[in-house]
Length: 329
Image (cartoon, rainbow, N blue to C red):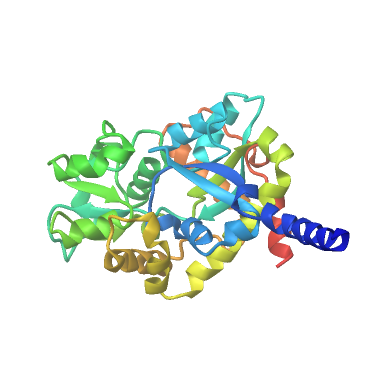
């Protein structure tokens, strides 16, 4: 009897470590994203393919609807990680934050929006935008500033540019559908779905026109990174695997995997969207932000009149974790 009890007890104890490795032991990371878009496919792939779980992580997503709201969530502690443009961290740095939000991993390397017109324009040129009303985001946000920069690079003057800054980022498409403006920038899959429904027509890729800039990255307070270095590293490892997948696998396969994150979108439109983003080389493979890209971002913000002073690269960006984890692969 004693021997049997001992065997049963040992068997129960042997099972305990396996139970502890279940879903309840996963570390939940609260991530506030600037918008929900197929442009960020690697983030959703890492979740769908179980890469986060392999690192002992679980993500909890919230849509901030703009970089300013994302940064507010990070600063207040409502989010562990903000996923938005580095400009939000630059603005905080200028204000001399005691707990500086820091970019520790860069995902996208260019603007992910597409310019949508109300009319079919098979012979579209950028000159077509002169005198037209444009919806491209709020003043001071990277989407609007990048668009302004593209126009100025193409010879536009301030008097040629007619941007409506009065519509919040997450309300632009509905405002456009209701008749506001002549053109609107949209992320995928919204742009392709507008086109399929006959509500608008894609005429240009803003990312192709704008070139390489650090568009969207993962940002956390310095104090959080200091206390959660292992989780930050695990998060980056999972993301790097997902980026590899997104860059090398067929768009249709990726669409099928992340469909659960976009229940109202068709796999057909998502496949088109992902193919569009693969075509313009959207993601940083090593998740490292180049300093020259950061400098160009500040050039863009300064050109828009939104930068009161320049910020040192090292004050806002810490590439250490991404460099070290990528080198281990």
